[in-house]
Image 1 (cartoon, one colour):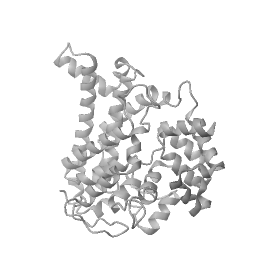
Image 2: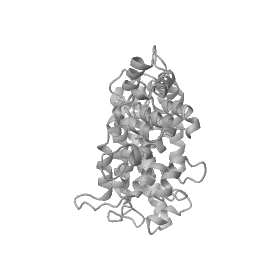
Image 3: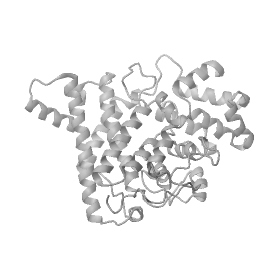
Image 4: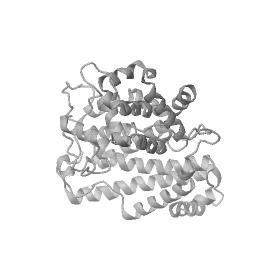
Length: 375
């Protein structure tokens, strides 16, 4: 492992001290705790891009998470970092997403504006430190310090407008918010970028939101298409399209590896602590690859994301979430028994508690609840 990787034998820094398990590293243990949560299992019923997809083959939030965890483990291994930590951070990175994807997040943020809003990264922290309670001796999962910092800092330090729950938790368990996260957290974040951009191209094609003729306007797609045509002029169809997307995936993985390896060698960081105080993210793409990634993002925004905000022929996500929230605010006794005690413990947090409950729902469940109770 490189000097600045988080080592397997480092003290995990859990809020509540626990004895180590010799058969598992602290970070493998984190990953196990995450995948055994109810919140993780419910990701199968949550939107990645498509709201109530008619096509069973497109990604949901769970399949996306699994793909990110595999990519991050691969890149961490190639760079000599800690693959088990990178994997654990990837497994937890989307745990806080509500039903209906980013649209659902916007709706809940508006609803909970006076309570500090809603952010899926903050919600992931709430889930693993407060809402999931499988253990008798503490609330949450008691994940390692490094996994928790990866949840909230995978995009960089937090220095302003820090959400209230992060401040509250940080006061008990100092996450060094003003420092950069570990190499492994940075790897998990960029693995997410690689994964969703590539699989959204595949899913968009499969869902017929755009054609390959549309997609070939992306410079990197055009480059690999021309290269494949030179190798085999008869190549065409679904297998050619998938091969090109795999080539794009490999391009970003190798660019991230090579660019980051050079930066790590030049920086000569001696510990994970030095990663935190470095002047910038140490794990990054080249400028050329970032340009290619932005071209794909622009294409997907125009041809895919803007078309996914409506449930065709049904009530809108906003009407559904607003309706369910208003119903439980007026009828808190209708909440499940496992949630009623939370209201009894803190009536001032009524709106937040109901927001927590709704954010954990799958799309099918929130729609069924809306039809069964709110209308």
